[in-house]
Image (cartoon, rainbow over the protein chains, first blue to last red):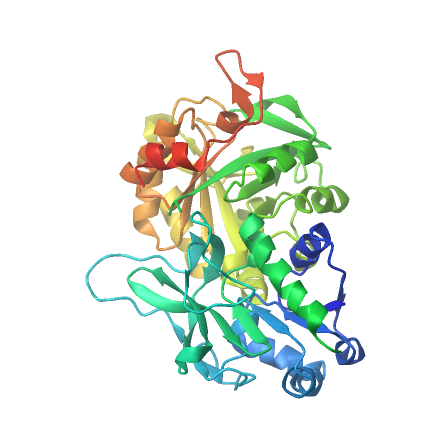
Length: 211
Length: 254
């Protein structure tokens, strides 16, 4: 059973809808005990970094998340802000992140060439896969993923980078993977069959996990 | 991969899907769930779904119907119509809607946009401005489905909602709605040049050439269309359709 963490940050319905379409059972919960028995966790998130960390803290979810992900090593997928929370910190706020990935979150900083770039980076973009995995590949020429964000993850450890994406002359890390910890800056639940393929891959990892 | 988003703009009236001309004469098209299923199969970039009578009927969004529609859509869906409270927004987001579209409220209660952007994030809040050309060529933003003039010009309004924290702006021409005679390029260009937020063109698209026109000449970030994707031929036979990626790429020269 995949537990989608409800901590008051954004839309969970579409993730549940897509999992249901591919036949993967999931529950949406904000309860620590639901997480303590989860065989896999999806941490979604839309909104501000500090608010998200505060919400996790106030709901008493930080210890159980750390325990499941770092201790029991259940697969976890962070989506959008959810992935950014895996980092050490963010330029968007002052609170520390979960620190699961050796990375910082920074605001888009475009080259000073006079070309106007709009923020947020909103829309479809492609990804360049940097390492082999069961969840993301670039075998499909027309693959595209839906992004909405102002800040992006910058990994400090190259091995953690699963994919990179270019926007406005800036290359950023659009997916991370470190053992059981994975994250995507884009929204698989809003990315048609390409996102469905990613969630299927994640669900398969889940099937192999203990928990 | 095409950089410009192309999105069908679907209008709800009651339980049905309709298409208007200049915001009136709603023509019944069919069941919205079926239409969305087809657009999903065609892998459209995004959908805009607007309940055009929620405000005039002083009622809340049709949550059940929205849920059924969104569960067929694996692309971002922007929903507008009858969103009057933060709780309304929270509820549609929980159903799987990606963006809340605010129209009348953005004019009559600007603080609502600010609060919503703060609570849900700017990228979740999209303002839709309905614009009519007055005598002497002056443009004015209208609320309540084009029924009430605001006295504000589009550029001033766009800058205001950007400052309030809106993440995106649909610029909808009431005069061009349903005419399929092309977008109001002058209007779009002036708004897109005035703000940094992504501007979505709406109202008047009748061909793929019109989409390209808005992208290349008005510099909008995205293009929305109703009639173009629901009608076929001169007699406007109802046919839900969407061009292939290849056709779009050629039309938009991307």
